[in-house]
Image (cartoon, rainbow, N blue to C red):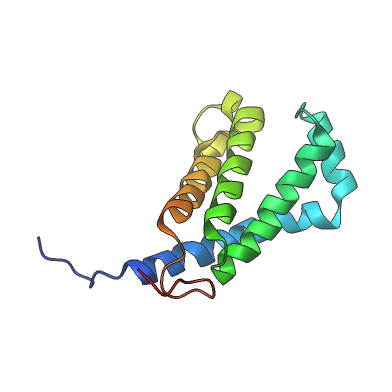
Length: 134
């Protein structure tokens, strides 16, 4: 089958890493700058161990997002994002069904899949942390 674009998995991984990294930092920054409020919010949502969960979410989103942007430790960063989003699905979004418009798990599931894909595929060639071997 003929392709319209040339096959370039390294460029695809760069786009995926940059977009996911920006999204995670965007969502994690308010948690970092108002951790107390985040803990209160997690408590109100009934998330278990709200202080620990808020710290984990903040590290996963801000720290993981930065690692994804740079392309270093992408297996760890991708897994952090995937675990963070799994928690969001289980404790917040699942009860609302699938649709994002209803507060469902559609969006966090997409982010989980992106994180897991990067964790499995690696950073690609265009990354600070790229390895010399393929």
